[in-house]
Image (cartoon, rainbow, N blue to C red):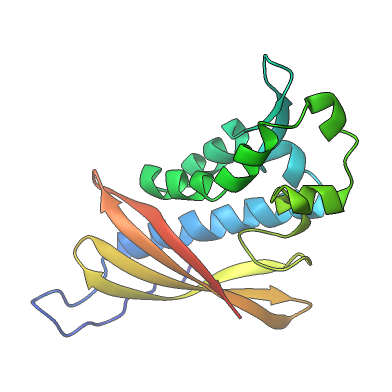
Length: 183
C-alpha cells in the first residue's frame, strides 16, 4: 500500500501523518470503487441516486435516504451532503406540482424540463460514460484540519478526468467536505 506524504513548508506542519494518508486513500478510493461497481452493475438508480416517490397528496418528490446513506458510509461531511441535496432543489420544487401517476410515464425530455435528469449523467465522475477506476494520486496538507486530495479517473487504461477532494477533520475523523470534478 502506497503512502502519500507531501512535505509542506509552513508554520511547523511538515507532513501528513501516515495513518491519515492511508485512511484518506482507503476512504475516497473505497467510495469510488463502490460507485463504479454500482454503475457497472446498473444499480446506481436503485441503490444510490435519489428516487422518485409519491407524496401523501399524490404528487411527486425525491427520497434521499440511499443517497445520504451512501455518502455517510464513506465519511462525507453532513454540511457537504446537505449542499449536494440542495443542488436537487429545482427538481424537488418542480416535482411538487406533478402527480406521481403522470410522472412515472414521463420520458427523458420531460425529466430535463423539470431539472430532474440527474440519472442521465454520473454525478461523482462526470459525463455519461462510466470510468473504470479512481486512484488517489496526491495529497496536500493545507493546515492541521484540511487536506486536499487529487483523484485521477481511468477508462480503458487511459486518463479520463480528475477530481479535487477537500477533506476536513471533524470530531477526529477526516470527512469529504468538497469535491470538484475536472477534465
